[in-house]
Image (tube, rainbow, N blue to C red; front, side):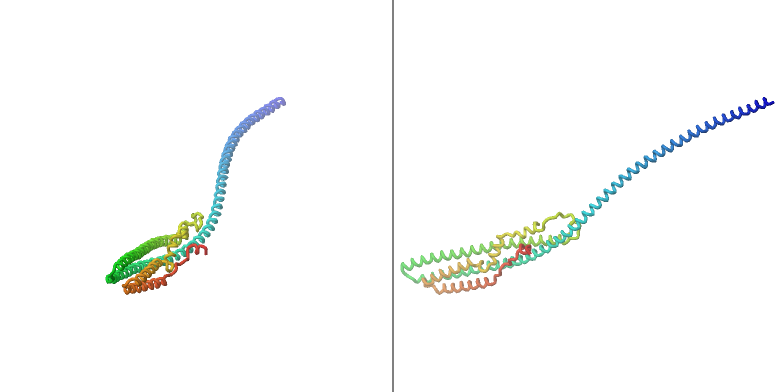
Length: 329
């Protein structure tokens, strides 16, 4: 009985062992399956981790690049801001310089207007001088013609060979003197007409300069509040073409104007011619019998001289203010 019980017990133990072995195999299979599953999950997680790391690395580099771009843009904005501040200061200085230039240009414009008025008055006076010289020439011609006819009538009553020879010499001398006086007066008229033409041309040039200065004043006044001033390159105000053209005034034109405006310069040659006429007339009046008409001619020439002196008193000196004086101020 005990043997059977031992066999039965042994069989039971073997059955249990077999059962345990079967269970261990199942557990090992389950463990292997779980390991495979875990390895698959781990590999998938590692792949996902690598993918996420790659994405984050790419985003990191992208963000780093964007940050560098933003820093560069910020530095550019700072530089632009500094340049705009410098440009603002420069534009303020430029505005002040342009305002000063505008004031100087307005003063120059006023001076040119005054000179223009003086030139107009000079032209009018030269026209009056020309008219007066023509009248003087006509009066001198009439006077010499009257003197010639009076001498012709006086010498017709004188007889003798010596008197006739003397009369011929006097007539030839009188004609030569008359021609010289007439030629001198004609030259004076031509000269005065040339001066009138030159001053008229100068007046036209000054009017053109005034028109140019007005246009520049309008453009400067319109351009003060625009954005063009920010793009203007620094240039010296005194080196502009208009200022240099106005400042460098032709000395020959100034000399001509001063000569025309100097008292006594207009009719000095005419006065010398009239004095020569008076001397020649007085000599002939003392040597010829027709002296009554020559005295009348002398009185006419004396009246002409008085008119010349009156016209000299009406002369005024040219305004000596120039653009250089304004720029020195």
